[in-house]
Amino acid sequence: MKEEEVANLTQVLKTLTEARVEAMKHKVQAVESFDNLQKQYTRVVKTAMGTQKDSRENYSKLVVMRKKLMETQAELRKQREASTSLQARNAQLAVQNGAVMARVAALEALIASQPSKAHLELSATQRVYQEGAVLRHVGLY
Image (cartoon, rainbow, N blue to C red; front, side, top):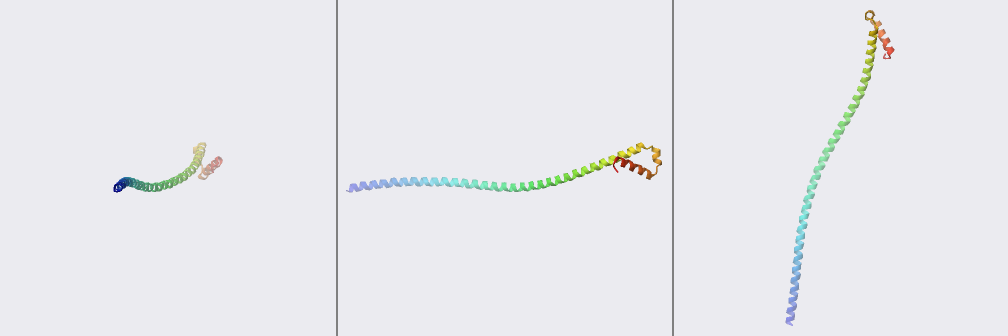
């Protein structure tokens, strides 16, 4: 009976030792897994922090670029308005220039049609009257 008890206790001790070895293996595996997870977590946190920093910098750049874009668009609007008003003024001056050139041509025609000595002998009032008649004839006065 003692031999059986000793064999039984030896078997129990062997089983407990094997269970303890198995438990230690699982504990070591758990610690290694935890270490790997900790390293991965640290790497993910560093990546996230770097990405967050880059995102903040890009947002700051975006704000500056938007401000510059708005300023440039405002300047472009002002330039277009100035260009439009200058084009209108240019068109008005072209019409006025054409009218003046027509008057000059009519006056030159009047001078060419008049004998120079006779023209000089006319009074100033008569010359203005003749010039007005020519301009009325051409439709400029």
